[in-house]
Length: 271
Image (cartoon, rainbow, N blue to C red; front, side):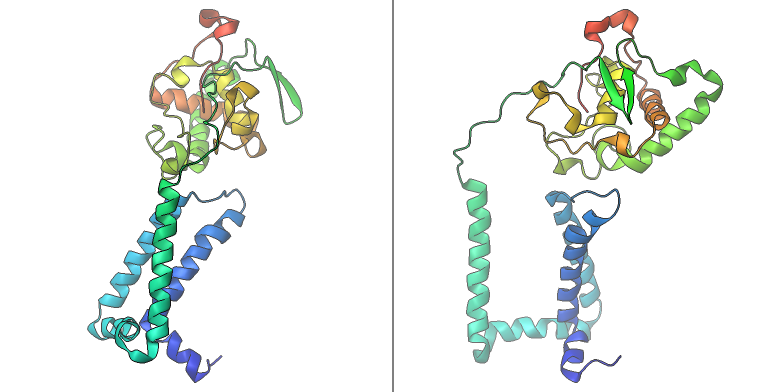
């Protein structure tokens, strides 16, 4: 389909091509990606990183050819110096001033809201949970896959696949809580390499935290802004136990046992 001459003139111009790419990239990242199955809202810090990457790519494209670079600058030069665009120039100046003012105000504005309540980083786990309609008793529960040494290698491979498909963006390639999305979350994702996380926990506690996610924390764990999803909606029981095996295997930590810690010390930590 041939475009009308007026529209084609804009479509062929590198400046408007660049603007279109930036707008489409923003719409895709902010509005389209969260609608995909299994996706979540993209943190603002990640949106900023992606948009900066797109902007750099656009600038490289428009500047790698002298003729294209000159054409790209034409609307900017015209807006800055031509008398006929005086109103446009004034409008851009006002818009930029308002934008900078709003951003600055958002950074320095005081708030009258009460300070956040202290929450328990290490809430006690419940004695029982319901997993996909089945009641599971956490008290005294050990990882059942450790009783199957012949399939341990296969379970570790399954746990590795589950981790890299689902946990990597937040908890990182090195299991240190430094994933690609990590800086956009408060609190930060758990650093499994730290001896204050899974090294202090029983595997039944870790199962509970993975299965129920941030929404499954008890009242003493609030306020809670964790993006940790309810993984029982996506993973099977064996997949969760397998990824727990993988976490301990990769970090070198040994899970706390009920014999050593007793029922009261069974689970304390955070996801």
